[in-house]
Image 1: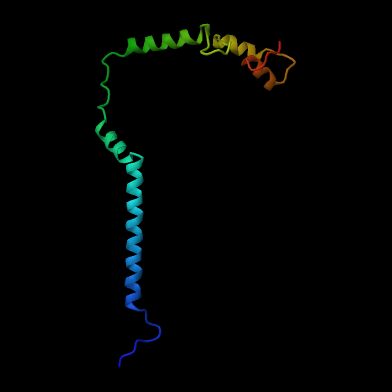
Image 2: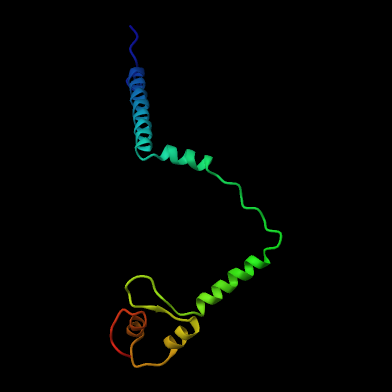
Length: 124
């Protein structure tokens, strides 16, 4: 009668471990697929691939568009306007805001910044 050595590993045990490992991998893949369907990730990836737009064409003479863009930005930083919402704040020109921040006062910097941002009602 052939008896295996004491240090040999049973083939049945190895096969059982491999089957359990494959079953665990299949279970993890099924769970990931289910979560992707629940969260609509699969559709999102497909939509991104389908929804790719061609890059914008180059303008032959973009100088006018650039001049209009720069003029609009200059107008915004040099104008007065109310800030959206009920904050009772106003937009002021950048130069004037920088002068107000740099002007000396007896307040600490954090307290002065809070006043200038409209966070406190104290008078300077």
